[in-house]
Image (cartoon, rainbow, N blue to C red; front, side):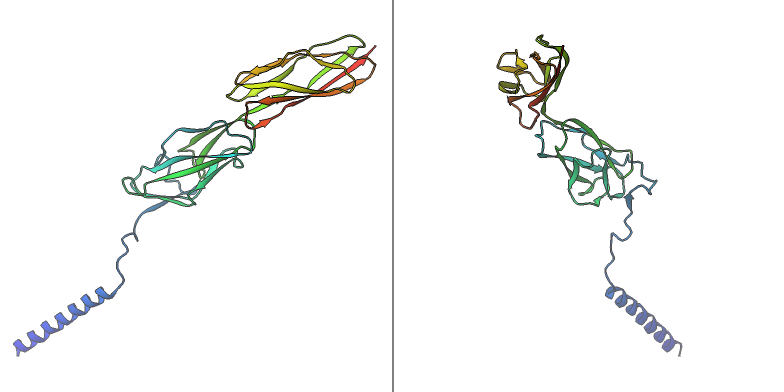
Length: 259
């Protein structure tokens, strides 16, 4: 009797064990990433200081980008922590209209250090819609670290208007000079000009050609001689070679003749 009861208990145990094994094998496979710790990099997450992430360079430079054109450069951002980080957005401190992250699409997941996707390449595109030297800073969300300094230079030539003020009729004045600024890293050449002066009150004394070194200015001497008691207005247009980009080649000339 005891032997039969023992056999029944053994069969019941084996049946339960077999049912458990079969039930477990029929369930969905375990998601190994289900419990992976992912930290989202945003302003509400106070656990991240920014030191967990690192740019491969401190600054990048866009040099001699012609006005109206665009140029792209790449930087690498890396996750230095032992947990995955999801970057939701980047921001530029000043010139959101000039600089853009054009690759990859956001958000970006950086897996923990030592894994295949712990670093990602970012493409930063600069569109030269402003002149001169431009400096900006790239941040992640509202974090202060890490940061990337971005410098850009858009070459251009600037010609300054001249107002000779009041001058006695029949007498001449040559001050102030007309300044031409070369805001580029290459020399420029002025081989000709066109003076629009309906009443012959202005005369160019400087000889051609004029060569202006990089990041320098040149003073063109113009003489103003009024013949009547009245205001005078003219302009001078220079033919400037050597710069690809924005060229302001025209200066307004003005003065007033008095007795």
